Every structure is written in structure tokens, then in C-alpha cells.
Image (cartoon, rainbow, N blue to C red; front, side, top):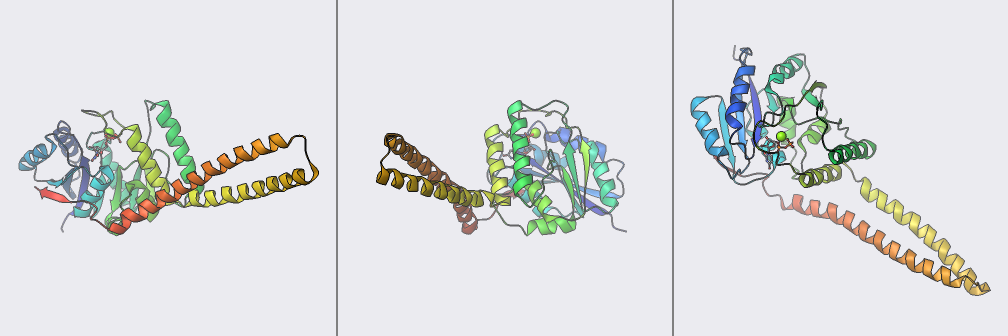
Length: 310
Ligand code: UDP
Ligand code: MG
């Protein structure tokens, strides 16, 4: 009987010092999983350092390694998609290459998959609390997502998850450029279960996901899962039109019957005008966000470009 293949996909950006420890950890943790064949797909996301050379070197010693070199830095989300697109496995597991997603949890993912779950996600249990600003940011984000979008994204869920071949095939049909891997997998549905894990600290180097990058990611994921901002703008516009009509009416009344407080009414109108102006600008900005996304989707460039494989 041919063994089932499990593809482990790991995006790598500036991870020269982490590649070998990752591969060793994977080999070590999967040594008892003799009923499967494994491939380790390492996607070099245009790292400026020696990451690609290290991957090719490792390939010579470890036949499980499949190296993919993207032509430039496309970002983690796209690197993940590139990895999933070449994975041959009956199940695909995505894992960070900095060892923050502990490979020792992979057997647990496999056990859940064997029970028949098609998506096995992981929830982070933070021992060391992240910075206050990040905590608040993520609280706000998940609250917004829960309240406006049709997709539920569980708080602290990560990209470290197993997906069945069926799910991977459906995932590959999704062509949008602004993509959040876990959001898309959550959107797909399928039979799902969660396990919790305690993340390790980064093995070497520094996280390249800055707060700014995370913020962009949050806006991206919010916009791609919801048109609520567009709706909200219409409601605000509606509300403001009513209030300004009332105001206008009172102004007319004071004009006809005279009012000692006329000056206050005028200043109020001026303030109101600037307020309206601000709101119109916000509205245009929000619409522009969606339009710009339509634009990038419509150009239809390939999601990623592979420079080389090893
Ligand atoms: N990564 C990537 N492309 C990027 C940035 C990061 O492929 O442009 C990879 C990185 O090598 C790591 C994972 O994405 O395997 C998570 O990145 P990082 O540790 O910097 O972020 P964290 O999520 O831990 O804050
Ligand atoms: Mg990390």
C-alpha cells in the first residue's frame, strides 16, 4: 500500500539560521510517523540573506526537502499560497520557519486529521503577554470581525494548521491577491477542529512582522471579509442629512421671525459644514480602499513568481 503524503509548508524570510534547526526538529518530531511520507516545502520569500543557499544545501542532505525560491519578497501570505500550490500531500500543514510553531505538535494535528477532520487549526496560548498595543489591536480586530463579517475568525488562531487535500484544492481556486491564509481557510468551512499550543520564542533573528505590517494585514482582512464600512458610510450620510435638514429648517424659522442668537446659529452651521466635509472625505477614502482593491484584482497578475526550485 502506498503511504499517504504529508506536505509541510514553511515560508522563510531572512531565516538563514533557522532552516537547519527547523529541519532537524521536523525530522525528530516525525520519526515515529512511519505510516506517512513527508515533504518539507521551504518557500524562500525573496530573502536578502543566505536563506536560499541554506535551503539548497539542506536539500542535498535531506531528500524530504523541496525548495522554492520566489523572485522577490511577496509577503508571508503569498509565500504560503505558493507552498500550498506545489504541495503534493494528502494533507498540508503550514508552519512558521522560526520554530515559534512547535513541530512537536504536528503528530497531534495528524491524529485529529485521522479522526476525519478536514481542517485542524491551532489556537495560541500566550504565556508571555504581547505588548498592550498589540493586545488591544487584536481585541478590537476580532471584535470587529465577529460583529460585521460572515466569517468567524477565532481569536489567537494561527496559520499553523493542517488542511486536507480537498480543502487545499478549494483554497487554490481562490485567486484574490489581498489574502489572509487563515481567514480564507476559515471561510471555506469543512469539518473543523481546534487544538491549543504554547508558542515558543523565535529561535534566531527578529520577527519581520512589524506593527505597521500587522495593521495593513488587519485592514486587508477586514475589507476582504466585509462591506460593512460601505454600509456604515451610507447610514452616517443618512443621519447627517436628516440633522442638517432640521438645522436648515430652524435657520429658516429664525430668519423669518428673528432671533437674538443668530450668530450662534451661523457658527453652528459653519462647524457643521466642516464636519460634513470631513465625513465626505472619510467616505471617499473608504470607497477608494475598495476601488483600489478592485483595481489590483482586475489587473490579474500572477500571485507569485517562482525563480527557481531545488
Ligand atoms: N515571512 C515570510 N515573508 C515575509 C515575512 C515573514 O515568508 O515577508 C515568514 C517568516 O520567515 C516566518 C513567518 O513568515 O516563517 C512569520 O514571520 P515572523 O516570525 O517575522 O512574524 P510573527 O508572526 O512571528 O510575528
Ligand atoms: Mg515568528
